[in-house]
Length: 99
Image (tube, rainbow, N blue to C red; front, side, top):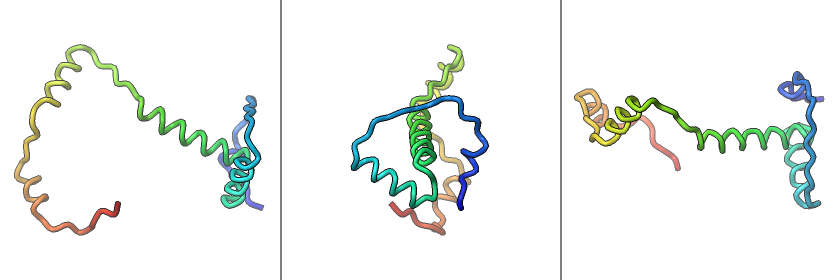
């Protein structure tokens, strides 16, 4: 039997209850089975990952006024390409992006 160790070592003191339509519950159960997790572990993992992504997009950087001014000025200046960067940009790529 497969046990997902990340959730086995955590003491769970809080409860989360949600209501879901039968189709969506079946979808979640199938996905949980496919990843060898129970439904709770699957839903908690997916929800936690999405929560981290949402919060990462909304991170606020609080700077003192002097640092904020320096940061703003640096963003306003055009980038300078030094010799090493220019040489690197001129070399053929060893890989290609796949989008």
